[in-house]
Length: 258
Image 1 (cartoon, rainbow, N blue to C red):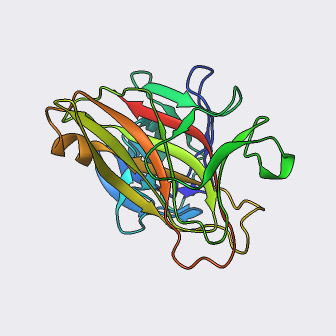
Image 2: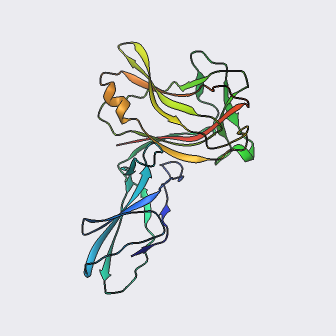
Image 3: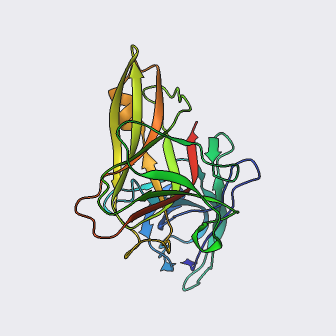
């Protein structure tokens, strides 16, 4: 079986169709045939009619050694009749499960991130065509040389429960490390919970974005805070001895759960 590529499409209620699928997980009659980067030639040794199921794989938290089948992408299913020395070509099409609950926030209507804590950076919206991922606007965090802290949050109260499978999908570009996490309120007391430190994708002053897509797993934070009343997303950058301004661009912040 030859798999040269794949397609992906979110429906009209599921936000952006941006994806970062890195491999496919292939099964025949529920038996694993392996995990493959594309393009791939997948050997099938048994002859006859086979139920083929292909899952989309990602790098969980952007880390190469934590690859998973992304739980919210539905598998591609088909049937093949396998004959000796035959090559069948498949281009699987992926989409979200219909039961996935998706909430996306972009910057088309303006900036929704507000300053919190000690902060001498700025967060605004850019509509410069060269700096926008898709649509007309993207979010833009900036720290001048000599400044030390960018710290902004979305004050939407997220009430995800411990044990829930919750991911944040995000498009980003940055010329410095930055972090995302939850400000969690439990019993009226707020605490800061880091989810992930994200490495730079751009170099120099970062004003020409190098966009990447990442899937961030927030399930661990929820497990560690089982009695939380609510959570607020934060984005933070603390540059160390930066000799150029720090620029962080983000777009399509998409919460996905069941």
